[in-house]
Image (cartoon, rainbow, N blue to C red; front, side):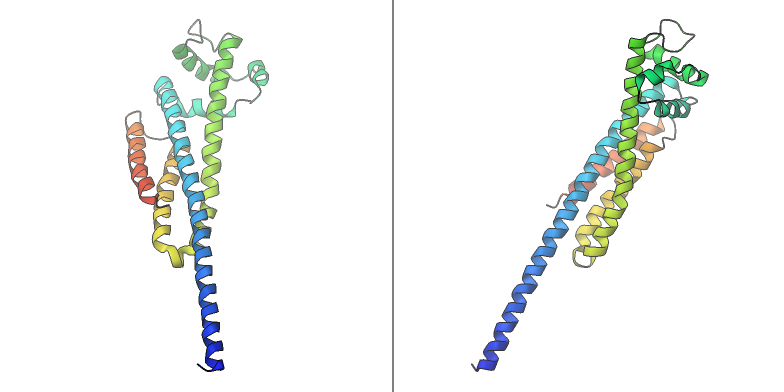
Length: 211
């Protein structure tokens, strides 16, 4: 083999090595991004389960006519217990509290809102749990579109089939999050819709579990 041919052969071999190395790096980068989104979607799905369960429990107690007002009131309550307990200006809030207090045994009569500080602390803790779940679902759901879009832009050409798996899961979990944040329907249709989301998401989680 002439010197020129040897140089060409060596150059091609080097280029091939660089090419294979780049492909390997790209796949590792894709895998890392894919798994990060997959993990976020599983966390969001779990938070949606918790939030919808809590909403349904409250809904079952206060009834269809009062559910939105109750949730709105609970979500706006001050994080500071003393600020909440010192506020006596919200008559509708007192009404919503009364509905829950009777169910949970926080009320010694059926006319007024929660009467004692110890019971009020339990109600306040319930409101804080609701606010935390609501905030977590909202934040996770708002952060995901940019991550999924970035995955598509950077890797769809080479890993389109794998991207499609995570995108299907994302679309279903995101819809579940919207359902969680904006409850609608009836006491009969709400849990039915939740079960449908859970069934679909369970199948998609298994399908997307490729790493």
